[in-house]
Every structure is written in C-alpha cells, then in structure tokens.
Amino acid sequence: MNKRFHSVTLEASRCKGCTNCLTRCPMEAIRVRGGRAYIMDERCVDCGECIRTCSYHAKVAMTDDLGIIENFEHRIALPAPSLYGQFYHAKSIAVILEALKYIGFTDVFEVAKGADIATRLLQEELKNPDRPRPLISSACPAITRMIQIKFPTLIPNIVKVKQPMEIAATMARAEYSKKHSVSKDKIGVFFITPCAAKVTAVRNPIGQEKSEVDGVISMLDIYAGVFPILNKVSADENVKIATPYGVGWANSGGESRAANINKTMAVDGIENVAHVLEEIENGRLRDLDYFEGAACSGGCVGGPLTYENKYVARNKVMQLISDLPLERPEDAVPCRVLNSFDFMLDTPIPENYSMQLDEEVSTAMEKMERINEILESLPGYDCGSCGSPTCRSFAEDIVRGYFNITDCIFILRDRLKVMAQQMVDMSNTKRE
Amino acid sequence: MIAESFSVEKGDYLRAGEASTKMKNMLKKLGIGGSVLRRISVAAYEVEMNLVIHSLGGTLSIDLDGDYIWLVSEDIGPGIPDIESAMREGYSTADEIAQGMGFGAGMGIPNMKRNADVFEIESEPNKGTKIKMGFLMGGGKSE
Ligand SMILES: Nc1ncnc2c1ncn2[C@@H]1O[C@H](COP(=O)(O)OP(=O)(O)OP(=O)(O)O)[C@@H](O)[C@H]1O
Ligand code: SF4
Ligand SMILES: [Mg+2]
Image (tube, rainbow over all chains, first blue to last red; front, side, top):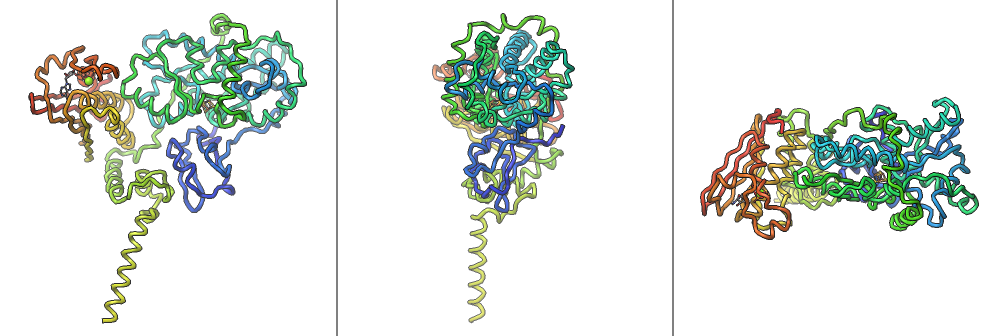
C-alpha cells in the first residue's frame, strides 16, 4: 500500500500550464509552475473534477488495463451499478452482466448486491442511539477524504459500513470458491469503476487495512468491449439480480431510498457537499439522521470515467430498476450473510492535517500573521496567473516557500514601474 | 498572538455563517481540530446567528493567547433585558422570519454555554450585549 498513491495524475506532456483546473479544484490542490500543473498529493481527494475540466486531457485517471485479469485463472467482474446506465439500448441488466462474460470474465457479481448488504448494515447502525447525528455516508471515497482534510470534526459521523464494492468483492470470492471448489487465491475480483476515487480507495483503503479487490478497470475501457456485443448475447432473464434499491445506489439519493430513512439529505457535486458539511459542522442539521454526499453531480452515474451523459444514464438506471421485481433489501439479504461476515470498517479514519501551516501552533500563528500581511498587499483578483488558485492561497504558498511575491503579475508590474521610474530619475540626475 | 474580527450585520441572512466559516478555516490552518474545533464551530455559529437575528449588528472576533481560544461577540443593541431567561433552554423571542428559517428553538445560548470552557455574558438594554467564550486549546470539555 502506497499512502501517496493517487489515481488522478498529470500527463505532463499534454499540460499547457493554463489555469482551468487550477481555479476549479475544490480542494485547492493544484499549482501551476514553470508552464505545467502540479497536484499536491496530500490534498488531492481524487474527485476527478480536473479530469472533467482539462481541455487538453492532461489530467488522467490511472486504472488497471483489462489485461490484468489474465493474471488469474478465475476472474470475477464487479460492475458498479452505474455501469447499467451506460447502455441506453440494453434490454435488461441480465444482458449487460452476460456481455461481461464475453470480454474475458468467468463470472460476474453485482456491486449492487453489495449495496443491498450495505443497506442492511446501515439500517442497523442507524438504530444505535450512541452514534452521532447525522451519520454521514462512507460510500463516496472522495467525500470521505475531503472530510479527513477539511471537516475533521465530522470523522466520527462517518458510517462504519464498508463500501459496496468491498462487500461485493468478499461475497463474490466466497461464493465462487464454494461453488466451484477452487481456492480463494486463484480467484481475481475486478471492480468496474465510474471514477478515480474508487481506484485510490482500493490501492490506499480508508478504514480498513487491505482491499479485497484485485484490480480496478475503468468503465470507459469496458464500454468499448461491451457496447458492440450487447445485441448479440442472449441472457437468462431469470438470473437473480440485486434489488431495485441496491441498483439505485448508482443515483444520488439512492442510499437513503434503499435504507428507507426519513430524515435524510442527499447532496451531489463536491462543492455542494462541502457547503452542507459546513452546516453540519456548525451543528445546524442536528435533526437529520443521515447525510449522503456524492462528489459527482448526479451521483455515481456522473462519475468522471462514465461514457453516457449523466441524465441519460440516471434515466436508464431508473428504467432498468422499474423492470425488476419489487424486493426490499431486508427480504433479499439473508441474516446468515450478515452474521457470517464482518463488513464493518475496522481501522480508524485519521484526520489529515495537510491544511495546517505548521505542526507547532505558535509557529503556525506566526505564519498566519505573515500570510495576512502579504494578503493585504495583493490585489484580491483571484486570477490564478501566479499559479495559485486564490490570492489567499498564493500568500500561503509564499510563506510555505513555494512562490515569490513577484510571481504575482500585478506586484511585478508595480515593481517594474517603480524601477523604470528610478531609472528615469537616475538618467535625469546624470544629465544635470 | 493572532486576532481577527468580522462584522456581522443585522438581518443579513445571505452572509450569515460566513464569519464562523472563516474563523473555522483559520483554526484548521493553525492545526486545531478534534473536539475543540467541534465545540467552537457550534458556539461560533450560534453566536453569529444571534447577531444576525436578534442584534442591531455587531462584531465577532477570535483571539488566541496560547492557552485559550477566545471568541467574543459584541453588538450595538438592543441588549437582553432578562439574561436569566435568555439563558434558559427553550426561551426565544425570534421573529417569524427567523422561525421560518429554522431558528428560534431557544437553544443557542444554552448550546454556547455547554460547549465553551469559559462563558461570560453581559448585556445592557439599549446599549448592547457582549458574550465572551473561552476554549482550552489542549482539550478542555469533552462535549
Ligand atoms: N445578541 C443579542 N441581542 C439581543 N438579544 C439576544 C441576543 N442574543 C440572544 N438574544 C435573546 O436571547 C434569546 C435566546 O437566544 P438563543 O440563541 O438561546 O435562542 P434563539 O436564538 O431564540 O433560538 P435558536 O438559537 O435556538 O435558534 C433570543 O431569543 C433573544 O431574545
Ligand atoms: S460520486 Fe461515485 S463516481 Fe463520483 S467520486 Fe464518488 S464514488 Fe466515485
Ligand atoms: Mg440563537
């Protein structure tokens, strides 16, 4: 496990050093210097906002190549439910699952089934009166990481249930191993991801030591293989699919609908989520039982590695859901499953102090004073030309030793004016 | 020592909460987290909202002296005629607008008192109210 691993990375050769990603990164984690961008590892939450905004496709998500599945004799695909929304013409979920077997997987296990189990466990956790309110969903790893950095006081509110992807991985391996009598280490399980955040969550898990997932493949890479064969495969339409509620986790608000929670709020888009977390931190939404935040607009159907327009995808998911038999997770998930596996997070989620100016409060205070002094002299345009997203972050960067005051073009211009004037004055004195 | 103050205007619901957010961000930059930050967040927001809802305007300031983080709210009126009642849970004179926005449960001041390690309130009718709250930097109350 590499603590610094990030799926979101910069393809330096394509980067023009513009300010598109710089000013739109919700974590202020990008700097531009010497004509190219840099991502600050300790602040990036892999939300993928920069992948969307970069016009030059210089921001990319590192995922595993489909070829990685060859490393295992038995390969199980774990499609995120958002995958179903990608195929507008797909007749049923069963067809999509079947098609996955034609591109190299030996078996398929729906992450939506993991979501059904997560739903049950969430319901149990909500029954515990000692847990703080509102409980905050742990499903979107970009949001969890943002909480670690920007809202550390809300860490205790994070739900202790593992992500559906992890639950599905454990279940898939266990069931396959039993059914086919093969040892678990011969089975590879591969998550088909809508986003970079999930890739990072596998390589560098939050709240658990090690991920159960052996590889993470981009939905975009799967799309190309599955799309052309969808009409050709025929599937057994009686195959058992997850409940409509489990599949519904693909859309924003799906968790609350699945767990049937009354006092709940679902927010999508990382900036919007940040605003509401701010309110929660202020103690304003105390009567809320559950808060579900998705970094992507629309929820996972709007993930940066999806192909289909998020509104089209959301609709498609809803349509596929309406074709499913109406079954509640409470009825679909046997108690045996809940009793025989442990799907709760078991390592603490630490605060991330990357916003902190210094380890020593007194030194941090001195630095803050200097930052405020510098800030006074800056124009306050937040233009990004210096390479820092705002004037305030620029002042901080100067104190951190990353920039010089003259990297601000307005300060530079003023200094040049003064210098030019001094030269004029000097030549005037000589002539006298 | 670092100090910053923010002016808060009467009835400015649009910007309400901004001062507490800025103070919170400042404390996070200083590496203050955990339960102290949680308690300050709640108290700062309550006291700021009271300035917006009940006062004629005032300032909110934050001050760190090495041991304590001090949060001071000072306004220009109308003052609280009966402090003892105002301190009671459930006592509120919030108007309809404030109630419509979910305020007026009469929990603000009790919440501040519960969260702060030091709590002082002075008020004089027609002059104004001053609330001073101290939070021990190295821990303090555990909620
Ligand atoms: N700055 C102030 N100036 C004048 N009166 C105030 C001020 N702060 C509080 N009060 C008075 O004290 C009462 C109690 O305040 P408190 O914050 O406890 O409750 P609230 O603001 O009415 O409701 P809540 O805070 O639960 O939304 C208020 O209703 C108001 O009458
Ligand atoms: S909302 Fe879903 S797709 Fe987007 S970052 Fe979070 S987990 Fe990934
Ligand atoms: Mg109040």
